[in-house]
Image 1 (cartoon, rainbow, N blue to C red):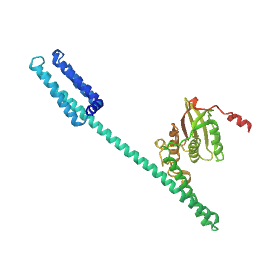
Image 2: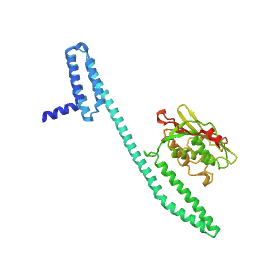
Image 3: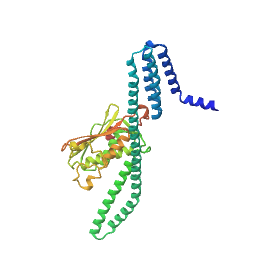
Image 4: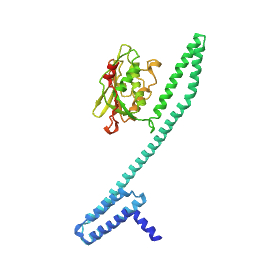
Amino acid sequence: MRAHRVLRQARASWVDVAWVAFVILNLVLMRLIPEWQTIPFLIIWVSLTAVYGFRLWRLGSTLIMVVTVTLITGGLIGWQVLRGYQDVDYLAEVPLLAIMFVVMVWHSRRRLAALEEMRRTHDRNMILLAQQRQFLQDASHELGTPITIALGHAELIERAAADRAIAKDARVAVDELLRMRRLTSQMLLLASTDAPDFLHPVPLDVDEFLVDALARWSHVPRRWSVGELAQTRVVADADRLTLAFDALIENAVNHTGEDGSIELGARLDGEDIVLTVRDTGDGIPPAEAERVFDRFTRVDSGRNRSAGGFGLGLAIVKAIAEAHGGSVRVESAVGAGSLFEVRLPGPAPAALPAARTRPRVGERAAQR
């Protein structure tokens, strides 16, 4: 049993055993071949440095190893100096190499301590992030029921009120409750973007996706048009992508007058598919363009509450695009409108099923 335990420890420490054998071999060479001078001695210290990089001994074990190697190698060189095989100057190399190794150990341990602190900080941040996400989910769920109940009562009061003042006040309450419900829904969506079941991707026809979006928004009084239209497919979550694209369109509507133009489009850029929303609205100042996709960012804080929103729409666009492995960007100038682009990775041909027989955009227009 004891022999078995020793064998098992030897297998676990085979690197150390091999290094000790290597050191003994070099010590023998130093003793037998004085003409090699300090070459075996230097090889021992280099191998010690390499082994320490793999093993990272404890501080006490490292100091014992350094002292042991210093005494053994220094003793052999001192013996060679006394016998006249080496110059006395070579003795200075022993403490210098030992000091260099100790400094290297100090730096490596300091770096390990910094990495360990970074790991602990990362773990704490991940815990805080998970707690924040869980709080947003819980708060959104808990607020959903009372908001729905209060909204139902406020709508009943608005419809049943004989006094116009009471009906007007009830309408204000309804509007604010609707805003709160929308806020909780957006917060819940942002909190769930990292969930594994956030996306359910399927192949989508890009041209049909844009035509459907135009049909949803064409009743809004703006000059609508369809620009470049890529007749291709993208693998994406239809509901999430529709939500993101509608958020871009809503943003364009909110910042473009009724006489302004909004153009929807899609193009191929290499293997990527780029969905675009271009408007002739207010534009974005250069200093604000970098942060419009941050949460709760509103470029024009003076806009009214109904048009201004919560500053979460573009953050949702960014979250959904990144969940698809894509990105979002904006080109804008004050007074010259904005161009928002959602870039999505194009699917590999094997990821797409056989194309369904359906009329394309031009064919649908002819049939109408």
